[in-house]
Length: 281
Image (cartoon, rainbow, N blue to C red; front, side, top):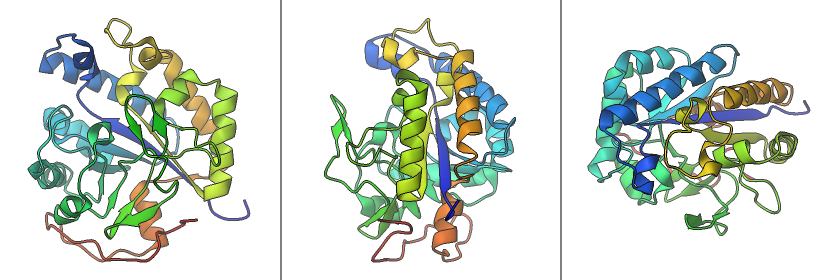
């Protein structure tokens, strides 16, 4: 490679509540059980590689499975997915960070809002985060239209924001739905094209995708290629991208490009302003 390229593979670790959006009743236990089965399946793939990943975890899920989250944190990055996946209040920003730090005994630097919900960046700063990855700078019908936002990393009210990757030009989203619905060769091509253009690639998935979810009443495009087939596809993607860049956590990339200010564990910090984000185009 002519220069270092970073592959940021991330997973939103959460209670499986998507069926609730489609009027299917699931108990909290059922939501957690499916989420945990997916996490086990995901880790069976990740542990078989040398890829470093970021796991955006709800504190609610982490409180159910603290030993698993603690074990993952020994090698990978644990970041916040707020406290609950279905409900939200501003206080959840700080409380989720503190809860995850208590479980892992490590600082939590990153945030991704469930369903990429928009929140004021000053709230995120006050809660002590160093970066936010709650943006998909594309158009998803019925969800959001963020075509006006920067395609690569930038600062918003002094908060570093790391958008999910979209392709150059047409801004084709390279997220979980594209991974399972797009022809693999096309998805891989767009990933490599984006990686070469931007110097990094930010992908995100959900662990529950990697277990069998066909029984649930959710759209076919959301459960296509679930379970073992998707595990095999993820294994293939990791293998194919290894020759194109280095798998690393978001915090490792951010801190390598811009050395951070030291922060004590469980202390609400404040992001320092900067004119340009690391690697920004």
